[in-house]
Amino acid sequence: MVLAVLAAMGTHWTVLQSLAWTRMLADNLGSYSFTEAVQKTFDGKHPCVLCKVISAGKKSEQKREFTAQMEKLEFPPVKESPVLIPPSDFQLMPRANTFAHSLTQKPPTPPPRGRFA
Image 1 (tube, helix red, strand yellow):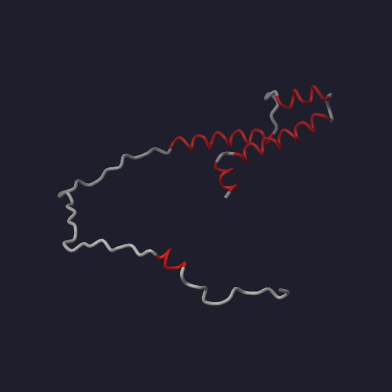
Image 2 (image 1 turned 45 degrees about the horizontal axis):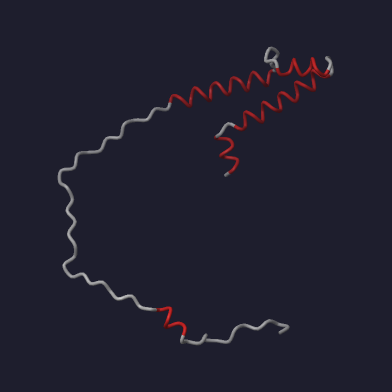
């Protein structure tokens, strides 16, 4: 259930993007200094293949999200208004006091005993 909610919120894109950035940073650290590698990874000017796929997936998901339109609900006209008629013989039954009655009775069997008692 939690995974379904996270997927509906788009968390999978965040996880994939984090993996792509981690891979890009590791690749860039082999060729550049730490500050240059971090700058090159997160500047957005040098996206990797996975970053491009993630970006395209996010855009296609957003396009599909906005195409759904709500249609106006129409109900058929009602010819007659319903009439509620109470039953002719209606009696309210008295409520039994079961709590007071149960206090005077003993339990049907003795309570269970443990093996070592």
